Length: 499
Image (tube, rainbow, N blue to C red; front, side, top):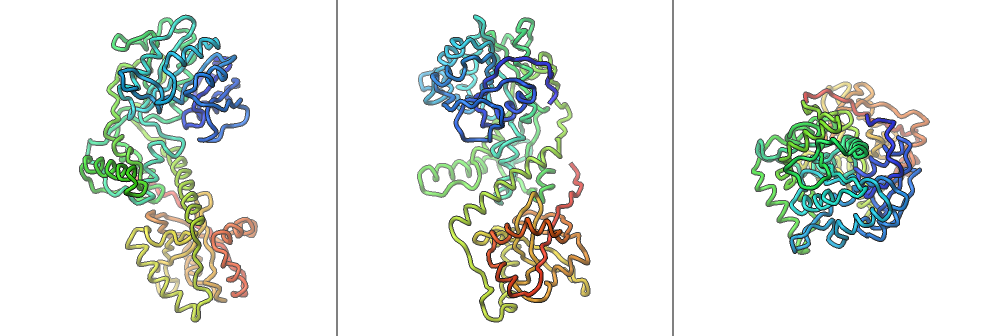
């Protein structure tokens, strides 16, 4: 982050520190050497060491007064997601929380000098939220400086950001079509950029006079700035290279955006009525893509002037950073799914059946057929174990085979065991991979280029406990085979894709 390292904001309070924006802001404040206090519950992302934690509700004025004691700067990241209308034309920051006046009273009584209010992303700037934001900015004065920072659709941290939702949709197999061209367009804002902009906004509030952030069309003395990565883009096309890097094949078929929105809304309604299970994907995702345009060029230009934070005008995606974030989201999602399945049931396999090799061949054929026919919806997860299909070419025949194998994910790699169901002979697929180590695997609905290698003794020592935890019958395989069963690591190969 390029924020001025000489910035001095005094003691800082961050509300919503467990959110993606709040957590990123906390870490940057710590890096700049400032005392940081966090207000919120224990959920969300982990809070780093060195932060004074105040357990309480971000919408409770009593907890605010307690948290604001001795604080100079307040970064309000909690209320961005809970501005609503109270039904009588007034704007509150939470359905059950205080009015903006109560929050201001708590900050003034504690002697807070400035409030930087995160207004939320472009998909949520409804009338109630804008009114709540204006109520805060109108109250600036009497020693308290207040500003608001808006953003486009946030991405870059947490599992609920735009890219995280897209990764989960694709991993579930529910991203099968995209809206018509031009229907899904929105401005994007990386979480790092938003945190940097909030720091710069706080620094600018120290010299409030001369700011051009306040425009005639916006009421109140407090300025408002909007931070984006660049002009509006189609986020599905923008992040498509990242999905391809993960091994997914994004769909080309387009269907009406109204159908997508209607499908998501209907499923959510049936779920609330307890007539259907939880929606397979966040229903708000598709609605948000068609309602996220920021028709606010004045505040974007003001951010460039006042904060010296120019947008990335060509809209180029930081592909490596996006890939690393998406990979972490995918790993957490797959781990959570395995845990849910493991807690519900476990499936013994076929090692005690007579004529194991013939049984294994029949099961392998059926497994492979269902896996390919359903793009991994059937066959990727069985019981508490996960399976992939390994493409291997016969070292003598030159024929191509697809072999279903149990695997354990390890930091983006796939770990498999050349057990051959406890047979004394080395499996043919491993011999084939030793001859041609570069190959392709199908993991769920992902198709990934990998390079196979045998795990070193130290790696095997660390990985075997995880393999046994995933499939305890490997112990029987060891005793039955009478040989050392090698662990094989399949490391993804980054294939350059056109952006």
